[in-house]
Amino acid sequence: MTIIPLPAKILTALACVLALTATARAEVRIGQPFPDLTHYALEGTLPARGGQVVLIDFWATWCAPCKASFPAYSELQRELAGRGFVLLAVSVDKTRAPYDEFLKRYAPAFPTVRDGTQKLVAEVRVPAMPTSYLIDRKGVLRALHSGFHGAETVRSLREEIIRLLEEKS
Amino acid sequence: MKRIPCLLWLLGGLAALLSGCTTVQPWERAALADYSMRPDRDPMHNTIMEHIYFSREASTGGRGVGGSGCGCN
Image (cartoon, rainbow over all chains, first blue to last red; front, side):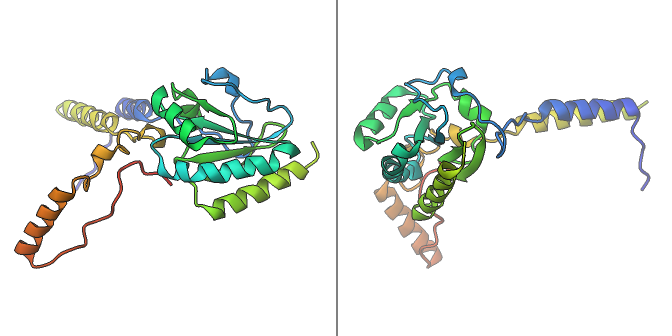
């Protein structure tokens, strides 16, 4: 079998086609600043986050593990809010009605906003639902938890949050 | 000269195939997680199908996993 060499122009064209069809990835990585939430037209009131340790949790009403996470996250918020910690839940629901119904039913102890346009979640590129991002007092992403695995996730999150709260700002 | 059109066809085919592939992102799976997407949403239908399967194959069970397609966790 003889291999026919491809002319350089065709190879260039092939490279261009592949580049055009590739998906642009812009996920946030640990050690990088987390995107400024004020730029994404989120529905709802953002809590004051300056100088606080923030846990941003991406969730949806159709996601079963997200439902399981809410009572546990409410406990975390109640326990650590007085020490400079705030939990913000960002819903990725496109429609308002299920979001309102969910909040009425679960009555979380932490603030929630809705990313109805899904611009923020697409920028962050969450790997699973739910995913929580732990941000230090300087606004840098320090840890990421993909999914919610019950007590194991809560214990791990709690330890990491306390470690960040004890860091000097 | 015959080689060029063949390669162009190949390139065109590749471009069409590659651009046709897409991943449903985790935050886009609301429709997949809907109850109507569950294969086992109708208990009567399940019972009938199970009975047919048992009658034909003389075996039962082992029918995959439950749940819909949100792909969470």
